[in-house]
Image (cartoon, rainbow, N blue to C red; front, side, top):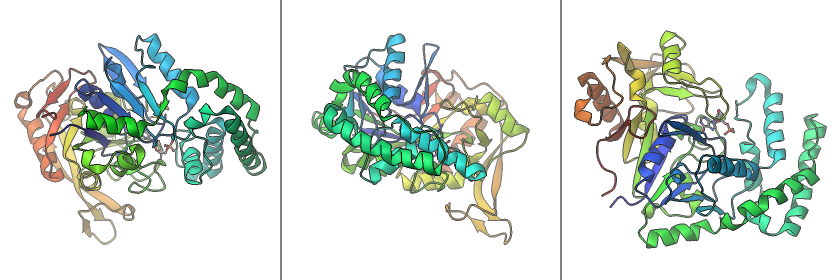
Length: 430
Ligand code: IMP
């Protein structure tokens, strides 16, 4: 039985995971963010109204769903409170049903200052981060000096730890990076202001999830970013600082692999990437511009223009294996509606030796060019179609070919931003 579902991005993020989490959450009891932080941007359209969430699990827009931000997430308490208030303004009241792991590390202003200072110093070699302090916050976690949200429960201890850590960062910021110092007092004051709002949300979320599993409640694990931004398996160093692949669910929540019943990979019908780093199928022509415009490919967190390209079958096969995906959801199929021809990359060719590579290797992305197969477009509107049989034949052929390349089925197709623009090929809940 597919009780619990993991939703992961199979590309460089921005695959449209938020919409699918939201779609599937109507049938679930819990929705869990397990890694990353407010670098993510999940855009949801409910009854024509757009809501962008960065930190709060998307499924919480349903009134009966319980949200968990587990230990694998790095939390800016100020952004968290901002988001809770934004939701309240939009008539979503979540503070009684959002629980945050006491072990989740905090992102504080010195992390943001450090992220920005480092990027500035790197100049043309910068990563292109979202500037949200994600990398430095994870560094603190691994270096065993992080302040965690549970520390808000003991202000005396927190203030001592904070003083030491602010000093540690100010040394670097001022002496090495020649930036302004950060005020310890200001951070402490600001933390005291948000503390009361989040205090009761701070819980042992692993135990909450174990109980939910015992009670046979359905859980959705909501991935952020995507496979190729994973710190271990992505296009390092042009990655984020967490595990956005399947392993991140296990370490990031305390839920074991036996309880992950179904792993759904979200794949956009073409590819995008924000920030720097390799992107084999990137387009620099009119089609690239078309995808960018029609797909509204601008970052929902930073507003940056996303780089665009064709679907990369080599990368997709890798994502299937790394995450042991059960099936795929193809999103934004409608963006391809007006194209006469659609390409899929099926292998890479070494531009010097002409050797063909069928497998993705993060060490072999320089000096390769994509080998494409070309499919006829359907040149018809697909949004609003409810059954796969009603899609144009060329669209069905394109989807069949993706299944062949990925060697797993497509269970969901999304043809627009609204909840209703979704074709459920197979029910995921048995
Ligand atoms: P960081 O996560 O802010 O450290 O950024 C590292 C890289 O990951 C940069 O290339 C970002 O653009 C990218 N990134 C981080 N979060 C997202 C996301 O939610 N969608 C797409 N790219 C992201």
